[in-house]
Image (cartoon, rainbow over all chains, first blue to last red):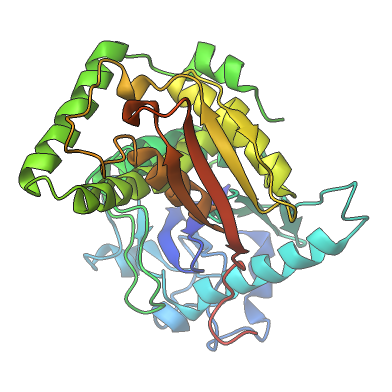
Length: 212
Length: 183
């Protein structure tokens, strides 16, 4: 199951953040929602499962696993963007998103230091916890592609690569009207908001067998 | 695994008619000259900045298609630019020469230059570096992979020189940016 997809640029800003809301069986692994991440940082992975008890807010107070009920959200216009339920570019600057970046950033640096630098180039591909797995790919230009999934999903490197070489390239780089530099200001940076990119990546990701 | 320039050129580069390309670039330069009243220094600057804007996009295409990883030395970088970059986008392979002692500066010798086919410069255009856009492209593309470089022309066959030569100098390797609030 794919929970969210984010892109961070080389200025460490989240230029695209897509959370998918899943209709789904109650996750037995929803237990961790009681861990002490609550309130202060939100859910870095952006995990949203419907049919669970309502959460009392959004944004930085998003519950640790980002669990929201469908009934609560269906009334809100910002909750469902387009045919595929979820959030588009809503949590880019949330603490949750910054935390996710921080995790990847630290792990990436640790990863690079493992092994002998000269002969063995070590890069971060994913990390997993009991219930979740986060897939990571960085281009040489410092663009970071991140997918958060459940632990059933094994390896999504080829999907991340596809998102970069196909979707990002075709809908952002080749799109003369879209910037490729999204600004350096952590609060005022741009985002990928062009609908071609959003629709194309949505239909690509939802078509994958691992999406549901 | 990274792919060779030859392979990318053959299989994943969309080709266009080279005359169309050459003539389009020629019209751009001619238009700039007229826009700037033949102030060739300004034209050079403008071409360079147009090239920079191309370069920062081109590098993504380059990386996406070649799968190249970061280089560790300037020698490696030069090799990749020449044998992969120029090959896949322009189907030429320039020579590298004149390495400086500290390995931070080298010359690119263009044996052929698709931008400059059919071109004859007017006699008053001594200050014009006709293919200056290449400098901008290299500067933009390398900037995006954390290399701050200066690129400039030193010789151009269009000006009567025996070869076309570009200099590329590494100013510094930029550090990856860190999130706000960290060192």
